[in-house]
Image 1 (cartoon, rainbow, N blue to C red):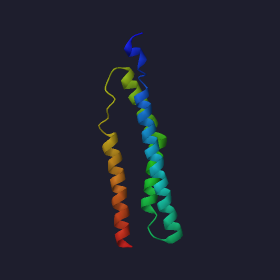
Image 2: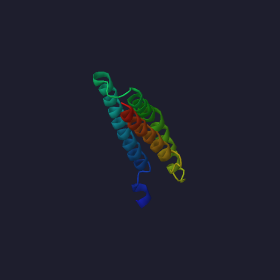
Image 3: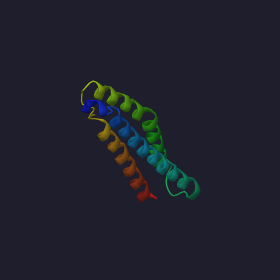
Length: 108
């Protein structure tokens, strides 16, 4: 048996997709907790929590599966699976959400 046959080409893509799903679920939980805090204690405006929760839902339901399929296709074709937009885009959304929460905290 050849060493190349022992490596599952989809395992890396699947592990990465699962990690992104866990991150998205965590972001959803934080967004829901922010919304809950606003509803029960009027501590924050609802927009940061809502933005975080909706962004995470879109990420988990749309972006992660698309990315998984694209990475799997590229790995099977022998091309690089790296994306130049996924990590910076996610970082930008999370950074804007955190900045929005901080601004809201300063104004209240």
